[in-house]
Image 1: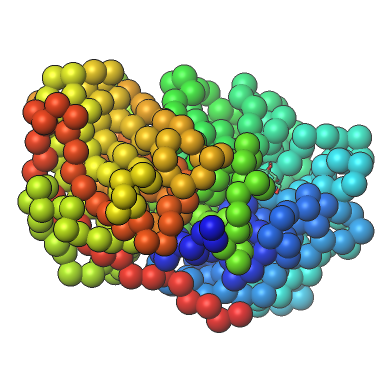
Image 2: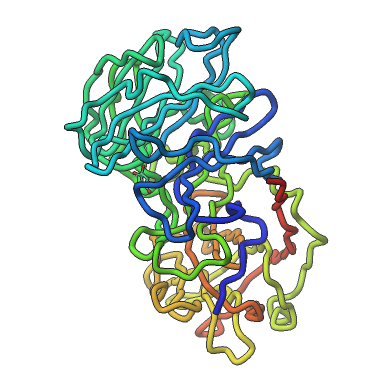
Length: 451
Ligand code: FRU
């Protein structure tokens, strides 16, 4: 069976995609670079940076490959910053964008390099003095995320897997600041605002799997929480947040896949897709403390078609492929309830999403979601509040992304339903649970192929 290309999640025109890279907002555009390989089966030694831009994080315009592999190695993950004042000294007139990325070579040496663009990211020139950081003895030293730290007037770089911190005034010479007490690929470090105003806290992201809140003073990061889960689905990874977004807004995006099976799944003409862009905020959660909440960006409402407001019992008559669903569940004691999505007419294939009151967990059950490698069930604890839980689900051809209680918990999973598996139904194992405020919006495609 050939899987169907996602309708409203970002996909590459051809080839393979994994991590988001070089995320920066500049001059009215969100740039999305990404790990790309021309073959649908990625080869580590030939990774490059694919590129797309968007004015609204919804409609994406594909652009030619931005950074190609070279004699120093493949172009692995990294980030981009705006150097408006030409602090790097590499621009002829004015400033521009600077990409900071890992060169990974055939001996597995990992070193950090830079490239500049004076034409809004359209063309790039690699620095002749690359690499700028690391030696050929360095291993597992990759995924530089750079940002400007205003209070100390320097750029800061956080590098995985070893998790070291560096500072620089010119993006070429980097001074070590120390190590972070956590290790992961694709680290990120940024301030996140409270939902209703009132300041922010620094968040250290560990590859999008977990995060730590704390303080960063320009020298070192002081954790104030343990590592907390980001999304307990199997398939949300390698997140990166956009740099330079106006008004202190923080948005990130991740890769919906898992290295356990990513290269073994069939392709849809291309391979790999991104999550929805998610706005990050902080909220005081009763009984838990300050926590990050994630909400799909508000701009996504532009994809909504006319809403359907069926009674739950009427749902089996609704057949949909790509949609958003909102509901409030009141699970009965000990019951499992929720929705069966992308179900086949014979009932053999489906994905179940919802709440298990016996264990107090939200869940995705993809035991029969269309591919052997995706079999399984994932869950995460979330206490009911006043006996209720709010669900917002985004279903597409190859995935489901769930947000509970306005972003307090998220679950993301890769699915592989057949093109005709369009069933949608409400279920309650005991029959005792109920569902209210059910709304379903068919979603339009966000793709715009213009390479
Ligand atoms: C994470 C990762 C990064 C690396 C990139 C290579 O998914 O392993 O650490 O830079 O993918 O494509």
